[in-house]
Amino acid sequence: MRRGLAGAVRAVEERTPAHRDRAIDGLRALGLLGVVLGHWMLGGFTRDGAGALHNASPLATFGQLAPLSWVLQLLGIFFLVGGYSSVLSYKRHRALGGPAGVWLRGRLLRLGRPVLGVTAVWAALLPLLSFLGVPGATLRTAAVLVVQPLWFVGIYAGVTALTPYCVRACERIGVWAAAPPLGTVAAVDLLRYGPLGQAMPSWLGLLNLLPGWLFAYQLGVCWGEGKLRGRGGALLLAGGGALFAVLLVFFHYPVSMVGVPGETRTNSHPPSLLVLALASLQCGAAVLLRGRLASALRRPALWAPVVVVNLSAMTVLCWHQTAMLAVAVPSAPWSTVGGLTAAPDSPVWVAARLAWLPLFALVLVATGWVTRRFETPWKSAAPGPRVLAGTLAAAFALYALAVV
Image 1 (tube, helix red, strand yellow):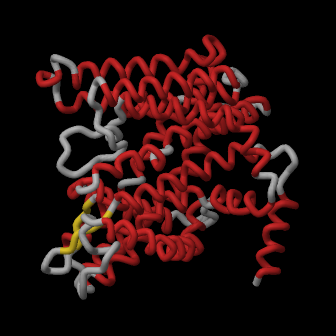
Image 2 (cartoon, one colour):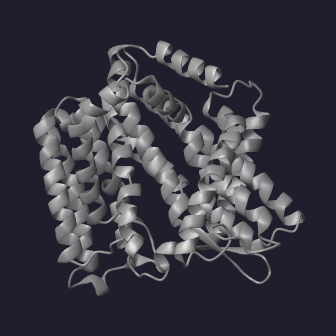
Image 3 (cartoon, one colour):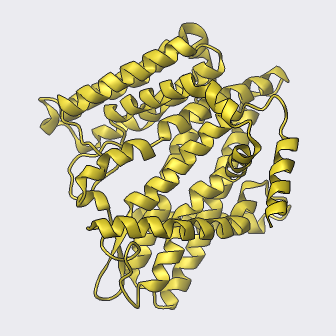
């Protein structure tokens, strides 16, 4: 087995082109694994008397764990790398004479196929699980968890569609092209949380959804264009860190980067200025550490896992909550299990949840082995399967809309 693993690692190394930017792939894998670990560690369940599962969070009991969300919330890096990769792909496509619409369609299809797959499968699973006796409350909880990472795909698709405009903005004003999204979020936050906050409509925060994540994406476009270098990275790191501290200490933003049950304010849904401050800090660090990360990933044993994660990025994103549910739901009717279906309200739960992580990962690998086909182009010429998948996905979307 050891020889087989060593051979696989060696094969990955040999197939990697010399020009491959290993640091960018490493950052993408890091951002994705941060999302997965964040959901697995900061999301728990409670089990009621009927054996149904309900969402819960250890942060509701252990506020001191909130700084952990600063480390696990790496979406700033994910959008940074997304912008970097998109601008290079877009410019290659345009250099060959391809229209921007064709490029965008290809990118959106790559994002959409895995989402269509997971939602279609869950649309078929829901009635089957109900028939098998799984409580309706558990199914609603499952729908919430499945949808949780998919909002990201919608926002990512939105900023990807803006790539041509991001490129033009970068060509005209360089890194300053990231200032308008930052200013927009700051202005909306001032209206939401300032003296006039109570008079503002509740939907106002939704205005931050696109600019909140466009900020890091635009920085990535500038990075790919060569407009963001060491000095700019240092300014992002220092400025983001200073703004982060000021918002926490003087403006009393919530400490957690994710929503906490019972709290009236949240930083991430929609993103607040604190999210952009953290993204700035993360992006600055990524720019400054790029060379060291690239050197570290010259080691085949470190590089091979990065390649595997990158090849299955959308599968990991779409199915990691399903992997956790696959472990938790079968035990729910019978008993309360520490770190799994027990309330996340003690240090014992934290230790037990850490012990469950390898099993979650193993189930995710097994699930990904089957579902990764949703990431590849669908070769069937017959429209029937695609129509069926679309219908099932729409049915799940309607159900999720009703319960989320």
